[in-house]
Amino acid sequence: MLLVPCPNCGPRSSQDLSYGGEAHTRPDPKTASPEEWRSYLYLRDNPSGWLVENWYCSSGCRRWFKIERHTLTGELRDPVLPGSKNGTASDEATNIQGGTK
Ligand SMILES: [Zn+2]
Image (tube, rainbow, N blue to C red; front, side, top):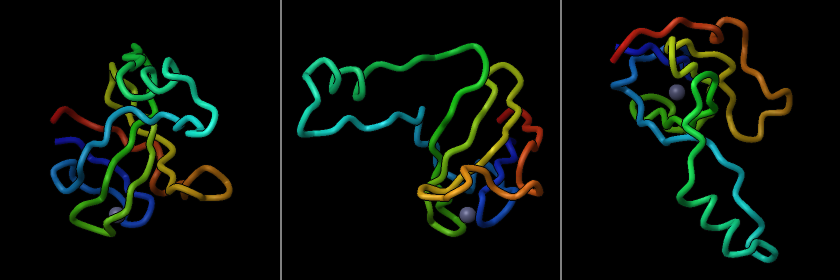
């Protein structure tokens, strides 16, 4: 089980959440080229290290949030809600060591 810290609800089982994949910045629809759309929709980095991901708190506050996950160790840090001003959540909800699912 992976323990994921929701910025609103605190640590929750990954079974209470929905994984939304790697976080990307959506290109501007008015100026983006087809190549930028293709990259946004289909290409993923798949790094060996820290990766920013989207998660949905489906059994709690029902909000999307972003969190950094280390792909080798499963460590999680810095959960943030969209539009938060400081870009980080409380210290209590950060740096929780995750296990395997
Ligand atoms: Zn939540």
